[in-house]
Structures are given as structure tokens and as C-alpha cells.
Image 1: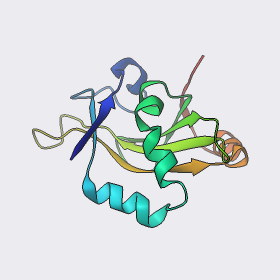
Image 2: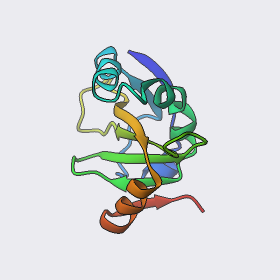
Image 3: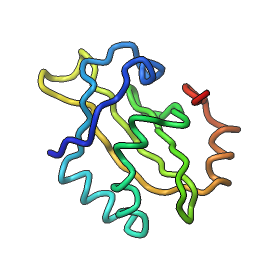
Image 4: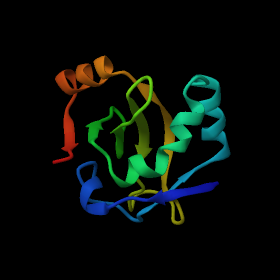
Length: 125
């Protein structure tokens, strides 16, 4: 388990008001998942996790409970990084933290598709 940083509960309450902690972690299993599923963007995604979590441009509703898609614009070839973040709630076992499920780069076209077709929970002003 690796600490990635902290989230601002005031921003992330758009996912759920029931946020137990502001600490965000990533497990070795999730790091391996990102390497396996998104090998081309692994290094860039990992490099930008802390910044994206602390200062997201968008948070988009995910199909899973207490989970959001965090998007941050970057100066990269694809243009944006996306993080699947599971927020820890009071329903989770004691000691759990907010955790990164996956992360990869997305294009401007993909972001615009999300903004049109998914529910935007948060947009940076």
C-alpha cells in the first residue's frame, strides 16, 4: 500500500457526503493492474496522480457506488489523465482508505464524449 496524497472533502462530497478520510492510497495490486491494462500510459498516469487528485478538472459519476472518475488536463500527448477513485465511507471496514482503482490517459475526444453522455458531478470553476 502506497500513500498518494490527500483529497479535499469539500470537492469530493459530490461522490458521497459520507467520506471517512482524506488520505488516498494505491495498492501494489492496483499498480500492477494499471501496468497490465494501460502499459502505454502507466508512467505518465502514476506521475500525475497526486496533482490530479488534489486539483481535479472534472469528477464524473461512475457506475459503482462511492466511486468517481477524476479527470485532470495535462500537457501530454493524450491530453488528460483519468483516475478511478473509490471513496472510503462509513460502510467500509475500519482502517480502509480512499483508493485508486485504475488510471490511464484519455483524449480530448473521449473527455468530450464523457461530458456529453455521463453525469458530471464536479467541474472546476
